Length: 484
Image (cartoon, rainbow, N blue to C red; front, side, top):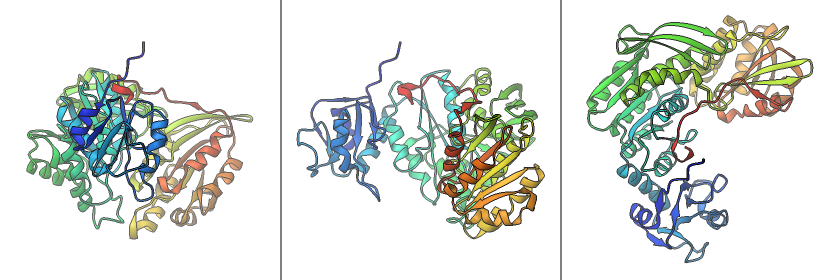
């Protein structure tokens, strides 16, 4: 039997949270800022952005079944008696809903950030906590100044735990998010030289990530990567902010959650780890050393959240990467099938190297090849050319058979590759896609990776159009509140 959706907001509660004027008597089972994904029963908040204004879609939201709309007091695009709340500023209203949801919640909250691995870690922790209670988690990568208050506003009062992702590409962006969420646990996956277009050093990036501690509840727990060179800096920042405990993870002999042995294969890794002095074994259902490291941080956070570690480690075998972050697809083509590793959602030097490692561990079938299809890594500033060129090392070391590239940055890499590794280059993903689809053959294992702005999902779409794709990962399962 399907559980009825929770009532998140009624007219009186929403008006109090937003300091607005309620119109009508209504109840909402969700919150939305986008009519494209709005569900009947949602409260639609008309956010004004740089390129568009949600007020232009308020009437459409009502026609799609919105329980009400949050709009400016002077807005005339919907009837005066249209259900909802009239406010002075809709962005501030969304923040008010988020703060009110946090104030009324008794859930134990974990905030997750990091240069790489934050979405996967957030999903893994939510999966674990969902097996042991009612969990709420931010959807996808709703991790910015709109996404975080929206995710909070969607949190049911019945939730016993919650996991929120926090992202940034400029200093000062994480602090207000953490102060709004007030987490009990803060996990930083790692700090790397990404977004270097906006930062002068990795230390500046670490300081920006450390803003997550500014909202940590008094005596809360920081979970930090002991292998990362910024560990001491982050640990000091956590203590200064009032953290009661710092839990470390990694391969470092002093780590509280420490990997002691791994047995990797093409579809995952068997891990032996010491967790607070207790030896435990588990399997990670996704391949790659970086996923092993992610699970160590997740287990550290899970322990700090009070989760049963026996249940937590058992759940990790069911781990599946989010779409575009390493999910594997078998695609039938004439004469057999090929394997696609879809990493098209994002890219950084560390993440691309890790993905190349996974490709190198993958075994092609028959006469198949290991093929890397790479799009530009963005926001690298003056270091961009050198960081793209540096990928030639791991590609050669992992004996990748052919490399296809798109974009100016990857063009630098392509020119540096041995001639027998050059599959093809184009200025954009849409121009590269036909080159890739024409070159693939049965047995090939193909990695597609690039920053979101490089639009490498275009290549993924072209490959999946060759046949009916089937996932090679079981999907993670957990018990979630309100479908989150």
